[in-house]
Amino acid sequence: MRQAPVLSLRGATKRFGGLVAVDQLGFDVAEHQVMGLIGPNGSGKSTTLNLISGALSPTSGTIALKGQPITALSARAIARKGVSRTFQLVRMLPSMTVLENVMAGAVFGHRRRWGGSAEAHAIAMLEEVGMADEAGSPIGQLTYIDTKRLELARALAGEPEVLLLDEWLAGLNPTELEEGIALIHRLRDEGRTIVLVEHVMDAIRSLCDACVVMSSGKKIAEGTPEEVLSDPEVIRAYLGDDDA
Image 1 (tube, rainbow, N blue to C red):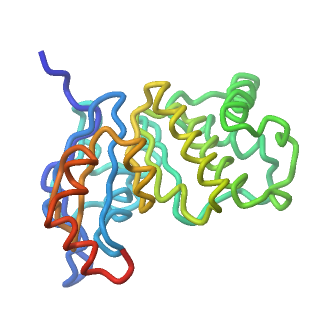
Image 2 (cartoon, helix red, strand yellow):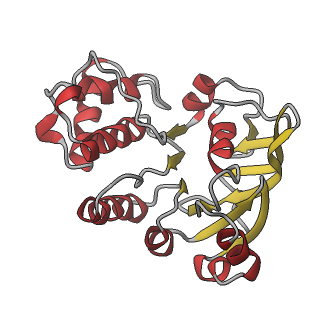
């Protein structure tokens, strides 16, 4: 018997006035699957993550988490249901230490940990991303990749059913990029369910079980990385966009 998807979009649409940013989008993400959401800049990928996480409400269509509709819920309620995310521009709590930032993810996440439980879990997540030694550091002392690691640790501290990564590898130098891909690979090997928006094709090929390709808000292809990246329509979408 086929297992029900962890995340399911059906006809998800987002309009901003006359602009249709996401147009009748539908796909499923299975448990323990890494799904890549790819396409040229401006194709609606980050808007899709915003719809899933509740940062934006769909104009129409439905989004379900483990069979339960989350379409009308607030971002906070969706986080409680089990969706965590990172952002293109890293968002930290600057007045708090590294550890306190991650504890916030545990307190407001899926399991609602408090006190010693939240602290112990936050330390474990910092260890997972290689930042346990920085637990007491202020945010202002961190390198760029460490702010990325910290945001990832905070998202993981929410113990998500689905982890959304919005161009998490963007802006990293070649050495950092290698480290970043290896870190996401470890999360994949742990069996986490991940939807990632990414432009780094080496990461897409090595990390993703399946990909959805978007162009102008629409899904134009879906399949394995090898299948979609050899699709003529996908190639046209990328070559026709100066920013691809």
